[in-house]
Image (cartoon, rainbow, N blue to C red):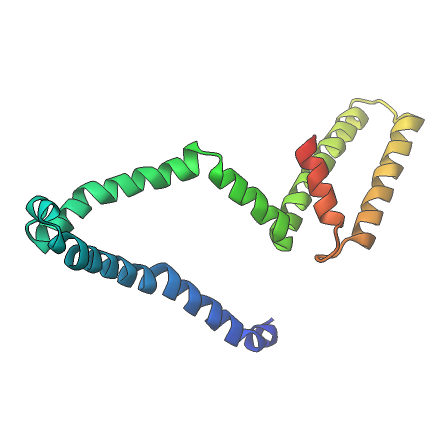
Length: 168
């Protein structure tokens, strides 16, 4: 495992750098730049706006006490109350093979666990499995064997399975 990690250390560092840059460094500088540019190029040149925000400090306080809560509410609505984030997440599962595989595996595990629990309950209650139940077990095994043989991260097999899950 350590050898694999050493081989990927450059790409891991690149990934962490890009996230640190885009999520924190660039975000902070973009906010400072936006506030400075909007005040000194827009507000100072319009007397009406200059009367509302007579100083850069008052403009910053207004943004902090009005803009930040408004942006928090907008972010909350985006994640919790609109279908936009659900759509983004759905697209993420469609295009990201590792996330898609994880979702499909968990769905299959739930189905198999329920079937196994049903069989255990039946067997512990003294019932014998019928020929149809045994055939169903064999069919499920065949489906899983086929799934393991045909699935790759780049094949459409997982995508097709995901579409079937969504359309259920």
